[in-house]
Every structure is written in structure tokens, then in C-alpha cells.
Image (cartoon, rainbow, N blue to C red; front, side, top):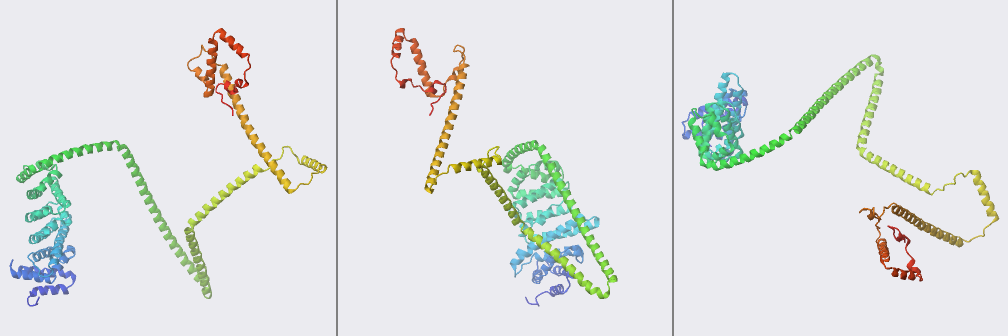
Length: 594
């Protein structure tokens, strides 16, 4: 761009901004207001001025100034509010030929953010102000910034969605102050009137937050200004988007009753009736039924959960008290520990100061006592002692550090030593028991004199009966024969012991059976269970007893002449095999011996 085309006033302002210190820049930028107001609205001259301001980065300087604290700028909040008006006037109607994307994607959103942040600061100052004059001043500046924001949004409607999704705008809306809150709601109303389609394109969470804040203002505020603006906003949203009606009916069930109690019969009664008619429309009728059914289910479930929690309430209270006491004890212990650490630190500090004082006193005393000629030798001795002390402490620290590093290996070594000691003790005990079991036990009552006498008798017998010499092979054969005989003896002894045990068991069984038979009642006196005691557990014995019983009955029932034939037959020789009856079959419960 050639220099003769640029307005010399803009060049002068740009030069002053560049050369002046930082604190004078806001006041210099105020000269742009006079330059902008000198050209008529909508003229090409005004567009040219805005182009030059943008090209020389004066808009960026305005943005930087708006981010600063107004109390620390020359001219205060008045300068800030005027710069906000200048910034909005420069941005509206500006059509940059260079860096278009930078302007629309970065500069305009940054300007909207700066206006919102500046509005939050002024809102905070207005709420915290005490004097009426200060409140009026901050409110005027706040309204000026909000008007600048509205002017910017009117010129660039694409910023509506960005402002609605901004956290700063939501914080501005969430205020209990009537004047600032109504101003922000007016801004929201103007945005929706210009471009209401962006309301459904924003995030669902942001939309819910805006609706929650509007419903909260209706339920908590009694101001007609707040109520009127809030109801108009709800009407505008509901009339533009039927989805908002369904959302209001499903999300805020007590909205109609609240509006009927607080806002019916007042100056805004007509708007309230219009909102009632929208809420009672047929569009949300079915959804209302579904919502009521869901409410009933939730109420039943919440009631069940509440009753369940009430049953557990005593235990929960006990647990809560225990956790509270534990937390309180931990906090007290922590405070006590901090106090002890602080006392210890103070004590160490006092000890260091005392030691330094004593050291200085000792030095002064030494300067008075020690001869100047001996001072060098004394200092050398003290340095050697100090070096020895430092070396001693360093070596101690190093050894303790090495010991801590080797502590695990020492634990393993000690554990191995303990295991080895236990194993050696166990093996020693086993060896001792084995040695004691094989050691020869001397005869009781055998004295040394008797032992010598017996040894003498043995020696005399060997002298009188000298044995013939035996070869090595013969002695081995004799030894083998002796071992075999001993083996046969011990084997027969074991068999004999088992046979003796079996005989003793049979004798005990016979004695038991005899006692049982002797104490048995007569057959006439027996009951149903007593004969079962005499039933043998051995099937062969039971069969043999049954055969004998049947034979006896047959013999008794036979005629007399049959008995004569049996007596004659008995006189004949009976084979020995028929008379061999097992001894054990005569006893009840007996078993055949091997």
C-alpha cells in the first residue's frame, strides 16, 4: 500500500504507539475514535480507515490492551471501555483483503473472548463495590462493553455460536445481580433474534446449562425485569424450536406450577399464558405420559433404595463416626508430628547457634592465651583434628550406607545359617538315636569285678578247649549257615507270633460266645430282637447250623421203627472223614482257620 494513500493521522498514531512506552499506548489508541467518527457511516472513506487501522496492527494493540487490568492503565476503566467501542467499530464493516482467514478465525473470536472476559471483570468489580457512585460507574462501563459486544455480534453473526459455547458467557449469565444479569439475558435475546438456528447446533451440555440458569432465575428471583426477560427468552426458544418444548416438558416437570404460583397475575401475565399454551401443546403430550411413567418407576426404585439405606443407617452411622474419629486422630497425629518436627528444627538451630557462639568464644580466648609464635602450630593441630573428625564421620556414614545396601544379603545369609543349624541339629539327633538303638546294653547288675571274673573263666575255657584252625573259606561258609539259620529262626518266630495272636483271638471269641449263650433267655421268653444276636456273620456256619437244625427236626418227627434202623446203622463203621468237623464251626460267628 502506498504511503500517500494512507491517512496521515493513522500513520501518526502508529508511529506514536511504536515509539511510546507501554503505559502510554492505551491513551494514544483513543485517538482512533476521533479518526473513525470523522468519516460518515457506510462510506468508502470509513472502510479505508478501518483497512489502514487493520494493516498497521492497531486492532491487535487494542486487543492486547483489553487483556490488561483496568485499574493499572492510565485513564482506568473509562479508557478500557472506550477502547472496546473502538475495537467493535473497527471490526464491524471491515473486509480485509489480506490475511482473511487470520481475521475471521483468530482475531474476531479473540475479540469476542476479550469482551466477555472484560465483562466478567467489570461484573465482579460492580458486585464487590460498596459505594453507590462506584457501582454506577462500573455498571456504565459494563453496559458499554456489552453494547460493544452486541455491535460486534450484529456485524459478524457467525460469532453467535462461538459466544453461546463460551464458558465466560455462561459465567456472566450465572449471576444473582439483577442489572448485570438482565443485560446479559438481553444480549442472549438479541443473538437468538438474529440467528436462532445456532441454538440447536451448540453442545447439549451448554444448552442444558443455559436453560437451567433461566429456570433458576425464574424460580429464585422476584424481579419483574429478570422474570420478563427470562420468559421472553423461553418463548423465543420454544417458538423457534419445538425440540425445546419437549426438553422443557421432560427436564423441568415443576415449571408450570412454578410459573402459575410466582408469575401469573402480574404485568407479564400475557407472556406466561403464551408459555403455558406452548407447554400444553399436543407435541409433548405423549412424552409427558412417558415421563410420568418414568417418574413413577424412579420413585418406586428410590423408595426401595431409601428403605434399604434406612435399614443400614445404624451401621452407616457407626461407620461414619469411626471414620470421623480415625480421620481426626490422624489429623491430630499429623499436627503433633509437625509440631515436634518444628520444635526439633528450632532446637537444632539453637544448638548450632550455641555451638557457633562457643566456637567464637574459644577462638577469642585462644587468641588471648596462646602465644603468637605458637599460633601457626596450634592452627595446624586443630586442622588435623578437624580432618580426622570429618574422616571419621564420613567413614561411618559410608559404612552405614553400605550396610543398608547389604542388609538384604545379610538377611539371606542369616536365614541360610539358621536353616543349616536346624538341619545339622536334626541330623545329629537322628544319628544319636540310631547309635543308641544299635549300641549294646550291658547286663543289669554286672560290675567290673564280675566282668573280670567272667573274662577269666572264658580265657581258661579257651585254653582248655583250644579250637582247631579254620580256613577263611570255611569260616565264611559257617557264617553264611549261621545267618541262614538266624533268618529261618526269626521268620518262624514271626509266624509263631501271628499264630499265637490268632489263637488268643479265637479263645476270646469262644469265651464271648459261651458267655452270650449262658446268659441267653429261654425260647419262650425271647423277643423279636434277641434271636438276631445269635445269628452268625459267617455264611458257611449259618448254613451248617441250619442243616443240623433240620436234621434234628427230621429225626424227632420220624416214626419209632425209623429210629431203630438209625440205631442199627450207627453200629456200623463210619468213615473218619465224615466225623471230621471243623472245630470252629461249632461256635457262633466262628471262621475257618488257615
